[in-house]
Image (cartoon, rainbow, N blue to C red):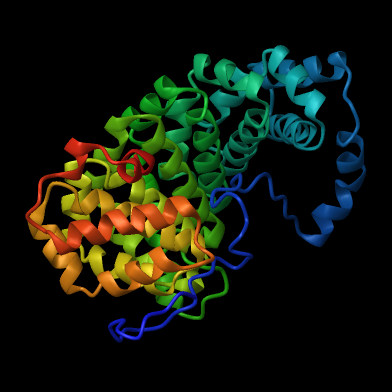
Length: 378
């Protein structure tokens, strides 16, 4: 950790996200299909799991799709067909292509509106498994999967269905900017913010918190943060939606809580929001400056960098914000960062640019002069 003798005294925390801080990406793929069964049920489907791990024939897939489309199918037969498609898509990449090509997407989407909670979960999770294949994402968007997935995120009976809906929306939003905008227009952003706020870690002893939460566990928060990052990176309009939905406060809370395992992810989402005026204003109003300055002081190398970038965005063209950042004690750790032998050259340049801004708070906007550090930050 870089240090400076004049660093202001504040709470010292280890800002690691339960892993090596040198890992390349803060946003690994969100959780996939996590099946859990009672011992009796597990014994009953053991052979099914083994068979689904193998490559399925076109005929067997077509018969399962036909079962889903049959108007006379019972709930039990629909459950069986949906679960088999879910498992086939989970275990074999080639099966994902075959299942989508067989016309399964639309009947699976229809299951999301079914009254049976288990059918909803199988439908959501089968779609999630299909969305792992990039070739299937356009088919799913064209089949109208986005709005039903948003409804599942909002009101599906099982926590697993809500978590998997968030993850499926993440994958669809990665298709292109138009898909990300469509996910935002469908109302996903406030729901993801809510999941980010209320998804408690499994096993917490505080029953009241667990009941108030969505009972989705830590994975739900991670999927929500990852999906928010994809949405806010893919469409500018989604950034404003995230700010209006109150995303900044829970993001700062996660950044301030190393035990959440969410410091990096939340910091990257916040950085996507401070790129426009409303996001910067909300971050300052919610007390984000102390959080970011502390991250520059005591964070991992990656956290120091993203915090520095965010502070650059906040301070540019706003003398009042620069004064607030300087008074929070940001200059000493930034100087230390700029002189650190272990920091990347680009990070040193960014830290130097921010120090210059803080020492001359009423100077002209650096955005106008476009120095290399600001260009890199954007």
